[in-house]
Image (cartoon, rainbow, N blue to C red; front, side, top):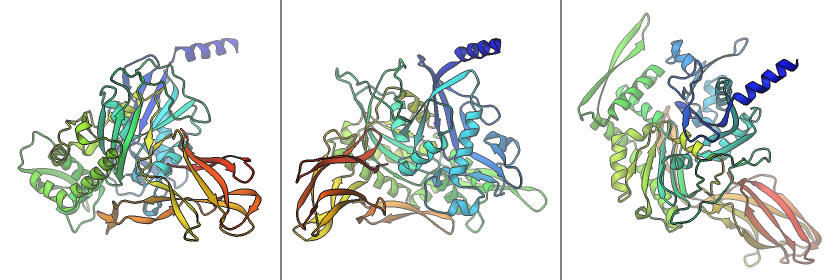
Length: 538
């Protein structure tokens, strides 16, 4: 037994320890590693599921007839099942994680969250044995950040890793661009199912020392600062996003070429290949032909796809692609102006994601974002590499996408109103917080309820499905807050209050864990009111 124990200890000591980054994509999931005290990043080869180093197709084959059977990534491609129309083939599930829609679950035997969980755990099982993962850094899209964040931590809760951190995808891409400290840049990430805009400032520069900071903590343990990489801190000045991406463009292409046919997996995959060909910068704007295999009654039939770049660009314009992007751009830049940041202040526009190669997009951006130069790092792995550059020792300052308001009694109007606490664009963690005095609304009142809501003061776009086809629809601004919870948090009053009495002075803050909390005192007796956590802002 002693020999076995020493052998295990020697094996443990000989393993390279470091940080693992996993960037779940709609079509491809990226897995990268950085060793402690190492500056070189490594894309990992995962046995049987990678198509290329560090690249795992985000697909799952799930058969639950008797004993659950899983195939993941390249296993499905090698088995010839990637174009199957079977409900056992599960693809494009990232967009549905955290969604309240039942569309995904209605068509599959498992939920999108369960599909993502299986993929994560199958990836973890194949991490090379010579690596010791001390910390795991994950990425999340902006548009569904709050629900996505909750799912990620639940999914990774049982993984044998000491530390887990989370960064949003645009911030990770900004850090991966490698610009000097003090730079400001706009990050645009067009993935398979989401599009995210983020205006980011890298702190430091001009002789300023970058502060030593922390990433998010898990189970109360701080991330250790053992890496030798340069510590930088990113500050997100504004961001916007929409549930729309490259796979939706594939559906547009398929429907345009075959309007009366069902968009099978064969057709969608062929449309994606055609899109990639049309995104080749060296391609002349002439007609392109691509053949795809369509399964007939007895065999496979080759069907041609014809589409020119000019017709492709007309299709994108007709479907509202550029209009949607322009609204996201305006929303993001408006948030930046609140922080005294304009296009002329930007060192670059960082374009990442599979859809970033589309020439129409690049041409449009160059025109709309002058004088800032357009930067195009490797589009697939940029987010994962940037996430690794954040680890460890970097604190990511962030901003609110939506405002937070408190329902309270207004003495002047003798009615309840929604009073803004924090507006969209508010940076957090907060340093001084917001103070507010609350009064009672009726006689002999023994408690004051804290009812919170999110308010969106700007119009935006959403993607709806009409006969299975993604359609961009503009929605009007909403002044009625979306209430956080049906059960409000209450503060008991030691002495009952009468209508109109000023009873409580409260201070609202947001901490480094994205938790909105309140503390204060009772104005009648100066007794302190201890901290109460009101919920996560993400």
